[in-house]
Length: 366
Ligand code: APR
Ligand code: ZN
Image (cartoon, rainbow, N blue to C red):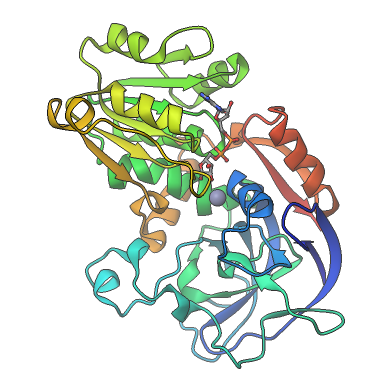
């Protein structure tokens, strides 16, 4: 089957032929119909986090059709439409049993054990790492059933695949982590694929002031299609002063959706007394953000929290977002900037780097 891999750190995505095994036990073989290009995969391409050995097959926003199932799969049948999610949970540990699957203590239980036949291998038999247990940049993917959610068949694949990362992360941070309430004020810094989903989440949660901060006017203007009520270009204006001007006191909750120290600090300073800031964007390992314990936290009584996958429960939340989309209450259509072929992944990531992508590129032909 066709697969797009990154052979070494900082090398481009290239299309190759690879072998995929048949499903074992709780695994599901999926015929991939759509796979989104999230910025996190570019981080994984450019930095060796020590998480995975290269070569790696990335692609963690995937949607497709179930082709076959392992002998212990009970939840899915051949022909079901599914979305993959990078939350890996065992379903048995204390975190999972108390409903916090996003902080599962044994995510490795969703993978094959050392010594088992690998799920994927190159034509010459050499090994290949499946990032996050998904590997959506391929014609087919072999995934543990705990990482999959069933979606209605009328849901289009390109929109559906975005639910697995961009939506659960962005909208989940607002709805699950921050528990934004009707009437709340929020600031979202970074209007990319994830940030726009946070804007949608804020609208669904009933926030009445939704301030979006970015450095590109086109992205800011675009965020209004998702529910932004105010936009700030932080290249031209001081975003903290502007948030104070709009709200009087700061926002109930501020979200950083880029992964930079400067914007993380801005998020903290935008939160009102007693308010909270949330870090969603992945920071480059080793890069530190300086905070002042007294001025930033103690006097204003603020909280800073890291957001893991929008604190989402994928089995509950992915079908919920699919239904909100089908009811016309969540904008996913405008998130799709372009549909591309698997051979064009590197080109589309270059365009993302150059700031040319407003929303997401999605692979829909293989
Ligand atoms: N200030 C404000 N906005 C900025 C700045 C800055 N200094 N630098 C970049 N941006 C904006 C970009 O213009 C862009 O709109 O941040 C946005 C980032 O969006 P994308 O590149 O589309 O990234 P996205 O896929 O949304 O991911 C954002 O979330 O899940 C994590 O790893 C992911 O770190 C990444 C982050
Ligand atoms: Zn992602």
